[in-house]
Image (cartoon, rainbow, N blue to C red; front, side):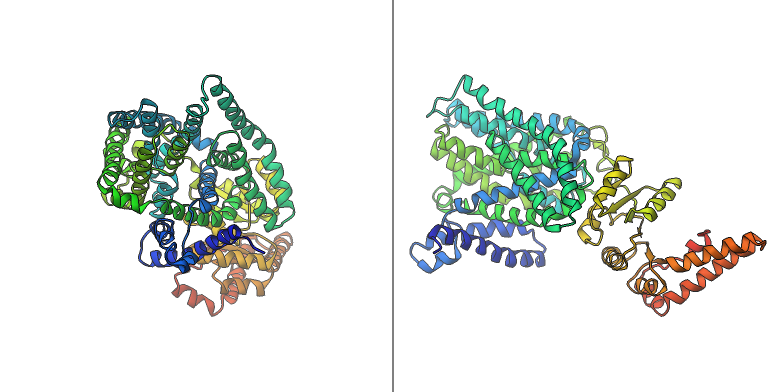
Length: 599
């Protein structure tokens, strides 16, 4: 028999899935952020919404969340998955390049905001210790809300997005020391003195162990998993890494998100980075939605109605104070006034970790219950304003070409997203294509699903990743939106067709050149939108004919001209009646390849 607690857990999961299925399409149709929908759903369905009414109307318990704590634990995974994906996108190289923003601007913002907000809390009657914790907590911003909101507006790669990410990253790094400090200041247990050493040393040792062991274990582990060619096993390995590193970090006093972030940084340097991103993406989206529902469920409407002016006043006050602090700091670090103003708006609301730190401090008796409750509600209210703040900042932006110029000295960009040719399949044919592209100084990025081949070629310096290029999401991660062209070199006809179809759906104007098994296969590829198909049998026959004719004394110029003419005849025949239809759809059919001397 299923117990009441188990039934409640499954009911909450089903309720969330139904909510996601309803909210996301509606809010996307309305061109509004689904984040707002999840937050509102949490308020309505939570223990202070329909959950409170369920005490008098029992049937409402079936469509409400009676206890926000029941979804709090799985919801924390949403932030961990988000930070893991950010680590994959960042890499150690980019983190080093951004050190002035992360450990400069991020540090100064955190310190000054904590001091100012702490002094205000002290002036309002809090003890010095309580004021310090409240000030530091309210100085934090929301990684889980700001980054998805910026990504939704396609602004993560802008100057505002990169600066916001750098500040948020430092804040996330500061969460562990904050939580450790709260544990050390636990007035009930008197944890002071040597307790600091006992708490900090394991945390630092664990962080170091994650880095060292991650470098030693992650690549061999994924080599073994990829060799099985099992998508299910690959997904299981990804989940193991995210959740496992997060739990190890939690056990040592660090935050789960920090452990997951370190794992992402380590995997960013491997050939499995892109396929891991594709595997994790759906879980990140769902779990972040659950996190937003949990945030909304924490909003105590009764407290808000009982004390509307102090609560709303607190929320508005610390948003304004943080904005006024961050604006001159950002300008002081060389950012333009335009970028500084946008960053100040985006990062001024509170964050999810503030709720964690304040809640822990309240449980430890450091922050009074009344002050803590007001601060938590004000923080939650401010988080509701984040999508609006992002929209306001975008409306203030000039979106000029020089938007990111002020970041050049602070965070030089890397060339990972340069315009490249994508090579799908890197066997003997793909390798030769890569050599020719290199000869003509054309950058490329290769993808292959043979783990051993990928590892070997990557050790030789090739820009190659493990993955299945038939997946549209992987093509997006490889930069198909800005790619100069795609060449498909696999010898499996079905695989070639799948890649061409996926790529053409993503980019109707993309130059796609594909390897074909025979004329019939080439004709089929032209039918699904390939720019040019190269049948193996025809090319072999033409090259044999060319070699024979030249060697028996026929003039080379005459032979080459006839070969090109024959190749063009075959191309026109294979394109057939599909050509006119494709040209109407805007797909350019280039026949210049043969005239450039393919032989």
